[in-house]
Length: 68
Image 1 (tube, rainbow, N blue to C red):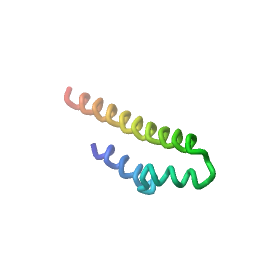
Image 2: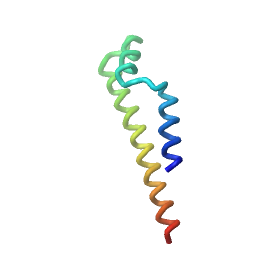
Image 3: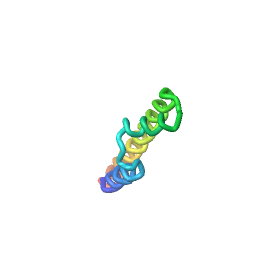
């Protein structure tokens, strides 16, 4: 569980603690279309959720191996 917390903290630091709205505004300010910025934000969110899910599954597997 500590690893999962560390991952979330790391993700927050890497993201610069910015909100999705701020990242969208920054993206659009670079002249990138709103649709492309939206897709990029969705991909970012899915990547973070996927990493968290993989870590949770690894943690659950470790827990089940320790109980045997």
